[in-house]
Length: 274
Image (cartoon, one colour):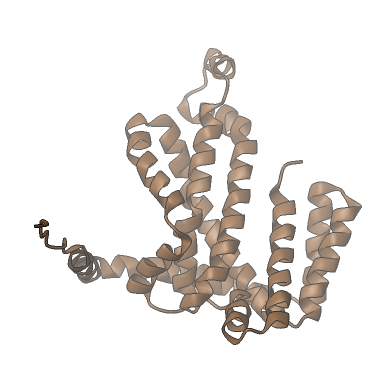
């Protein structure tokens, strides 16, 4: 006769925890949602008032200033012009505004946490399993708490994107600072640098390639999550992708997918170290 083990009430525990957090910390969640809504609205308004041709040329100029490569300049013009030609420009603007918001907030929070992680062993030990878990949880799982705490909509999708994309800035900032050579730090100490001077004049400049890679990874993860977040009403380029899947519209799905790929490649070229 087999043992009869009653199921653990995990679902009920989670439901009670969510209700407790909403009842006692609802104001904090609402405040964070308002911050996200403010930046999202600002980025989207700014991008919408710029004529498409101006934004395309500005993006190409930015690539030229950063990379000094004619091939990349031409690629950006062709990519963004294709998105405009496919009549996906409004969705492109929504997706780009969502990515800019998620990346800005993720790096604003993640880089200081990475610095703290590199200088505080206790914080490093505490955050290590949390970051491991965040980077191994399936992407769709992030949508569940975002939906429970913030409901349907673009803001909820952006918040899920922030949580999903924040580990790379934390970890790569930590890695960059930890890899600063001992000789370089000793040179700073010999010139009488205090802890703040050591951080801003030695550690952060030396760790900048790693930090930029963290931002690059944050952008790529934000883009992937923003598309998936259309399942909870985030809109953008993910919306026609999901709609084409539901209606088995292969042509429209391919066009939307091409737009996502083009945006990913343009953003990647901006920050990748070559």
